[in-house]
Amino acid sequence: MDGGGVRLYDTARRAVFPLEAGPVVTLYSCGITPYDSAHLGHTQVYLTFDILQRRLRDLGHETRCVRNVTDVDDDILRKARELGVHYLDLAAEEIARFDADMAALGLIPAFSEPRATSAIAEILTLIGSVLDSGHAYQAGGSVYFDVTTFERFGSLSHFDPPTMLAAAAEHGGNPDDPNKRHPLDFVLWQPSLPDEPSWESRWGPGRPGWHIECSALALRELGETLDVHGGGRDLVFPHHECERAQSESVTGRPFVRHWLHIGLVGLDGTKMSKSLGNLVFVGDLVKEWEPAAIRLALLDHHYRPDWEWTDEDMPRAAARMAAWRAVPPVTPEPGSDDPGLDLVRSHLDDDLDTPGALAALDAEVAAGRSAGAGAALLGVTL
Image 1 (spheres, helix red, strand yellow):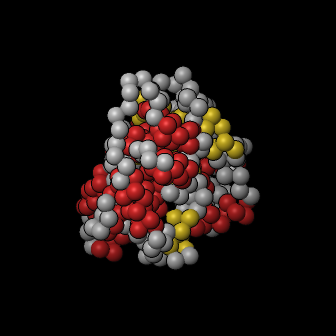
Image 2: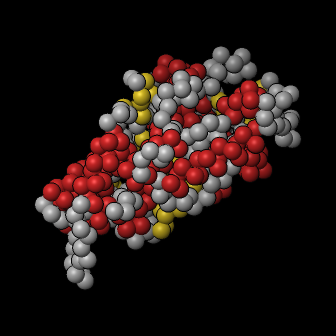
């Protein structure tokens, strides 16, 4: 059994390929770091995985989508320190808010939502295996992955060395760390600061690096090779590049069959960013707009390119919803096809072309035919 004709762009191969999978499709979506509310950029990622799962289930597959929670890393510890609260209390508050937002939008519940702090034992074992395989070294109280030992490093992102160095610096990689053998080497284990959580290890007390957390969780929850793995485009490097390198250095098997990355959502000419504060939150939108209309507003943008959120997005989506609802639903004859549903399926199979699917349903409605079945596949109840 394959993906039933679903074709997706694969970041590593830089082209659209059929999704090849068995009866059970395993997916891993990099989840939130719960130190602030999830904004529309995050939501677009999880909605993309939701739409993919809906189409795969429509084809008869079982889907198992793991969405991790990074509840210990530099960002959450920094924010907890600023607020004067325990980092796990901060995480619990933001996880509850995130779960409420995703439930409001009707996302399929994750198969598993493991927290990084739940996998310390697996992380320690995995780091030990990376060291034993000769792909890591100890220096200055930390353990680093040696990128020079993994010859395919960089082949996921296809970045040249200067671009990798810039991306590593932007995302906390600290290329100037004097303990590193190579500027792109990355931390697997590090000493904790006095006010940070710490766990015992054979390399001294400390805490895990960011990348090793996802590898340990993915391997624990879904096995050595994932069918689909992804997240926002900004995770391609260093996060996913490093994940793949450390995982494959231990297992000797492909870590991911298909890499799925989602474009960044901007506001006022700049990518939505917690550091800049130019954010739109689901929790604020649902105070004024129906959740199904928020789904439509997001689905009107293809998942892959970057795009800009504007004040016109919600009114346009609400008007579309009203037009669809103005055509009474019909009960199809047993065994008959629904033209709108078939059109939606065709567009989703074409690299999750949700804007095309919405336009096809608009045409059905304009011709006096119900959009109900097609909308339902998109997670929208009319």
